[in-house]
Amino acid sequence: MSKPVRSARVAGPAPSRGPGPGLRLPDRLPARSRSRKRTVMSTGGAPFLISVKDLTLDRGGRRLVTGLALRVRSGEAFVLTGPNGSGKTTFLRALGGLVNPAAGEIERPAPEAIAFLGHADALKPGETVRDALRFWAAFQGGAEMTVEHALSRFAIAHLERRACGRLSAGQRRRVALARIVLSGRALWLLDEPAAPLDTRGRALLAEAVERHCAAGGAVIAATHVDLGWPGARTLEFGS
Ligand SMILES: Nc1ncnc2c1ncn2[C@@H]1O[C@H](COP(=O)(O)OP(=O)(O)OP(=O)(O)O)[C@@H](O)[C@H]1O
Image (cartoon, rainbow, N blue to C red):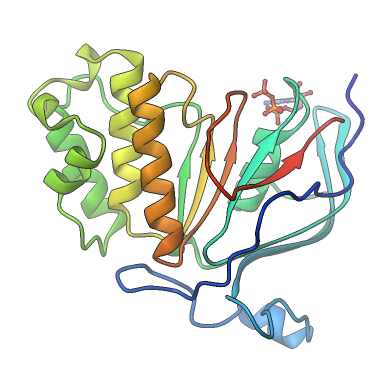
């Protein structure tokens, strides 16, 4: 059985880019944070998009994470690694506000600044790719990018009229990732984004992440495969 993770093993440079245009970034910390006089903005570099302090996470009667601290800045990509069942998904869900911590604090941006990609692609089988992305663009709101542009980012423009139920697993994942890019949201939380992707799909994902970080966004992804994201920092679970 894996031990609970306690700290971030950090590798790679910490970028200091500020937010760019076209991203919905939090202007300021939530009122709760300010009232507790917690400092989660950097003094010299880019602002923190999310900050975790003394986090304890339980699931299924088991303690997964204890005393974890993590701060992710605008412009950073973070990769969560570790064996099956070590708590990566639970941690991502906690970051997204979908799981309550047993203890500790998470300072996160407003929900409309977070795009979450779970294991499931969240696509209706009977809906065309174009209609699915149109739905998500309207649901997520505020997208500056067009559906066509998002499709081209993942080289799936030729699939726009195909029903999602008639796509391969990798094609569906590309559509789901196009939805994330289309969201215009600052913080991407991605659970196994690349699992069914081929080499080209992984390269397109890496490009999308690089652009997003260069524009001042941040990405946190759980993965079992090497994502090949230059400069990404790593948090290892269950080691
Ligand atoms: N719905 C659930 N109810 C109870 N326990 C759960 C549930 N989902 C997961 N768990 C437990 O929580 C622990 C962490 O699971 P989690 O999915 O976060 O791990 P993971 O590192 O993402 O795994 P994987 O690499 O397999 O995706 C596991 O021990 C698992 O058995």
